[in-house]
Amino acid sequence: AQKVTQAQTEISVVEKEDVTLDCVYETRDTTYYLFWYKQPPSGELVFLIRRNSFDEQNEISGRYSWNFQKSTSSFNFTITASQVVDSAVYFCASYSSASKIIFGSGTRLSIRP
Amino acid sequence: GAGVSQSPSNKVTEKGKDVELRCDPISGHTALYWYRQSLGQGLEFLIYFQGNSAPDKSGLPSDRFSAERTGGSVSTLTIQRTQQEDSAVYLCASSFQGYEQYFGPGTRLTVT
Image (cartoon, rainbow over all chains, first blue to last red; front, side, top):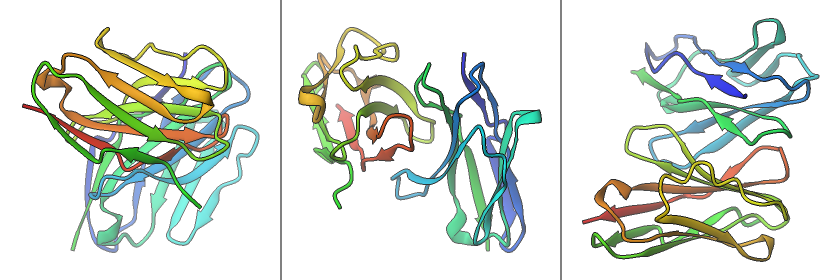
């Protein structure tokens, strides 16, 4: 069965610090997709990134970067030089054709000015 | 282009009444999901429609909850005999097969 674990319930850092949100997934499928979503205080979930299981290249988008490691079944998300606007709940998720999209429980990130 | 829309945005109802929540997915998206999110909590999966396949209803919390998806497009989530514990934000999302989901703004349901 698929499972996504976000062990960090809440993280609080001071602005400009780097922060990493952990995501560990479990799947028996060889083909699967991994996702990160952001839910700001306004409430609407925003898609950030999708990764497929055949592409372990790390991804960088501005201050955001993602580290996908199949050896540890992890898909971690790092925010560099955090800003107050990064404060949100972040969800990691996985999907395979044998299942449906499964979400982790989310990590609440607070960036203090 | 139009995103996922949900209506109403807010719904206040009395305990025991039935409510219908509507979701208009992105055109062409084959998959549609309903979730429930209580204040400060994660996403609770309710039901999943994929194309013409039988829906995955494994997340529906009781037989008071049901959902339909007509013509592979619009979906309606119905809650019968609402209870106070049904108060939450109900989120709809659509995707093209297994690709990323796009979420609607949600319907905030308050049962008094």
